[in-house]
Image (cartoon, rainbow, N blue to C red; front, side):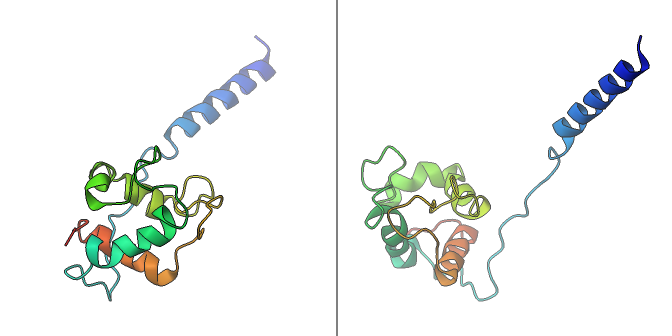
Length: 132
């Protein structure tokens, strides 16, 4: 067999194996509340619902009542996505992705959380998504 083909084959196989395993062991750290986060004080009804109205439901209409993209208009309608960590995944972990991070760059409403609002969301997640 031609030595160039052997080297090419081994290079392709090594690249394939590296690509298959490169990120398989990466783990994101568990969210930790900011130092000034009072996990006993932040709730959906108190602080988070108004943020969702601003960024997700009323101003952008993406996650309004009955939305096929997920209904964030009430705590009860969010239970499924909260239990599956979908909310955390899209708003915190994938935040910087312009297409799937929330709020997305194509939103009709604000496209970025303020630092203060984002800190409240992180605090709410760290607190375990309390309703009241």
